[in-house]
Image (tube, rainbow, N blue to C red):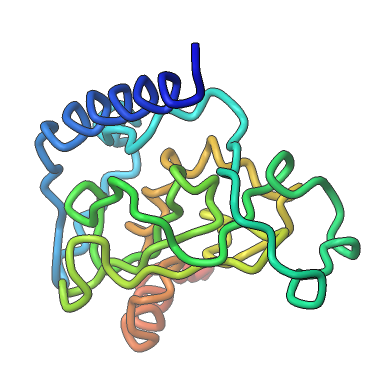
Length: 190
């Protein structure tokens, strides 16, 4: 099969998968100050945004002149094999309408977790504010920060989206609310 033929096949498969993902109904999420948490929500209730069963392969790019190339020799691992190597946030099917809680931070598994989104009040569109972790790092959904690729299991990211429901973990819950919850949850021994 020629290179154009495989490209057309890939494009057709992408179109079919996109129609399937776009056609799924969005989850209802709790917005505002309603903190009725159910930590036993089964993972099956959160539809996956992408199938994650193979290594992420970074597409071919036009090589830059030698003086403009980034030196990746100090980053452990092989770029494009051990970790993705994006220079901008790519277009994906991620949508804040399919996350369990707003506001919150969510890894984008379609980018191998190098990109993440901050979903809030909708000012930034359906994907929220999009950010890219630096080369060699991925968004750690457990810690809500970028971390070295070997410390992050991107396949677990979607199951960890529920951590945004915890007001003591979610970085977008106001500190006053967190302090109030800590006081309420304090155990007093008499």
